[in-house]
Length: 256
Image (tube, rainbow, N blue to C red; front, side, top):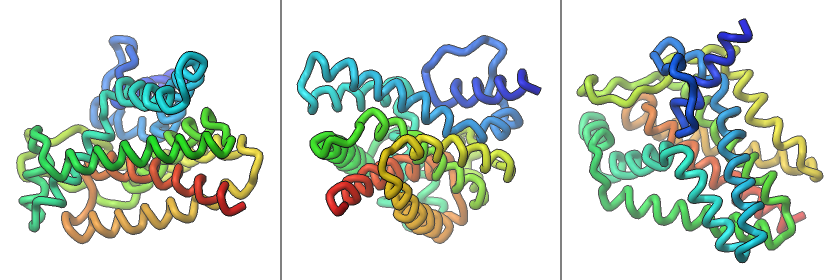
């Protein structure tokens, strides 16, 4: 039993990061579906690496540079997995007006104007939000870890509630979780929300409201245009949710 869970976790690590895993670990569709329960835990791992990178860099460089280096480390360790999904969604929904056209654009490996613009703005907002949170004396290490974990949990909710949409060219679709059990969602929720308990201010849990609204809006948007979700949609929701989390914390710390 424990060996299976380790396999599921390592499968999630292998799928979402560049972290080396044993050769016996693979991301077959069946195992990948089971591994979805640990997506938020992978967020904790990635967030911890980014947070430690910030912590170490802050002793050598100014805060703004340390934050940029931290962001680079998270992008490198994940291979820009979620950023790529976000860019594809920007291109697909920005340039397509039918389901077929949107899916065709999203599977195109080339990056378009909408994708470039989206990446520039979302990375800029992420940097500015983290920088201003640090200026408010918020524990940035905890913020980064929490941002990566809670945002991946929100993305798993989309995988649970929305039907997977097959591409018009199934030979070129990206592997993704197509079925998710209630048990997996609950486990993902635990790992996604646990970091919030380490904040000294209980009001931090108020961020769950804007995150819920983000999920509802984007989930409705994807349902309306393509009838469900793809891996790119989940990646885009993860990126947006991470930004919403940082901005919500910034607003809370300024208001209270």
